[in-house]
Image 1 (cartoon, rainbow, N blue to C red):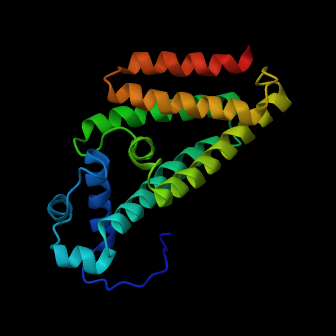
Image 2: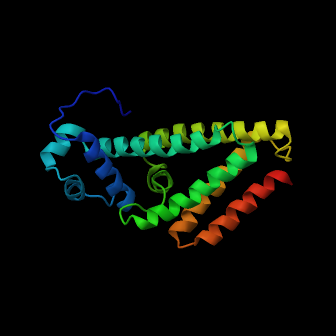
Amino acid sequence: MYRTDMARPRTFDEERALDAAMHAFWANGYEATSTQDLCDATGLGRSSIYNTFSSKHELFQRALARYIDSMTSDQVEILEDAGRPPMKRLRALFARVVDSEFECRKDEHSIGCLTVNTTVELAGRDPEAAEMLARDLAVRLAAISAVIRSGQSCGDIASTRDAGDLARFLNAVIGGMRVSAQGGADRAALTVISETALDALNR
């Protein structure tokens, strides 16, 4: 398992290099990103990359962890905004998902969602990546479930289905929206999908 407390020499801006590697993996996937691609992206030589990150796989794990920390914390912050009613929090979450897909299109180095891409590419054959993805999924489902339970309690959400089941449904819709966006779906199409999913909470 990847450990964050392993000491490494810092003879360059490791955070900048990690961010550059993250975008390389994000654009190309794990398998298709070569060591030379990582050298080109980070501006580092092979020896610097391997002395610092030990292997391509460890660098990928750190890049994935960086992406997860950033994206999930952003989503959880939206969901935990107690100043908004539960349904408005969920609508804000879906709006953020749609916005993020079109922000990615402006960046030629970022395609779709790295966690969705990694799930499709590696989750079935990379136990360490699968564990990272499972932990991230648990965090996001817990946050969505909490909002749904709150909405059910205050009458903002009419559905009496189990909050956990509804959270898994919404999360699956978000994943589908991200894949649809990669396939070329426009903002209007993604907005209709999100509105349809949210409407299901009050049926």
